Image (cartoon, one colour):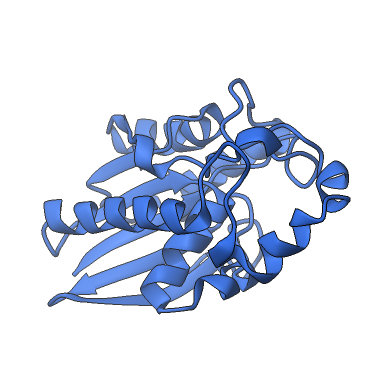
Length: 208
């Protein structure tokens, strides 16, 4: 089977405070850098064949320690990056919660387009398509790691779980968490979601 690991970037100072989106120069903080190193320990026993990343710095910085440990390049893929939040990019969550459109984002995301940016429908198509490309390009015995962002990973998981788009926000995707997709004989399964690496129950690859 082909295995795709969906890994959210590590913690940075914007998480939970601002909508970073595609803002450049948003870097991991100290805890985020520790999480990136912890991923190396969690995944050390896996034979990872390729490492892909969103081109945004926080994703690349999370991917680099694993790439170094596995002696692989980090391959940047534009289609793994965050949703284009348009005019909302960089605004604080506190500011956005005051907008009338904020409710639409959470209640009817399938109808919403970010002003000057992407719609959730467009973003999900972009993201699910790139995962299909990875499944097509990698043999069934390979494991690929994909470093991306919270909403991006939620949209991918919702697609492969067959969830209505309006429910994608219900999927939890914490910083540096791992979710897993399997593809075998044309069928995709989602055995793990939001495995949190810095919690005792989070290491799904611990063989002890």
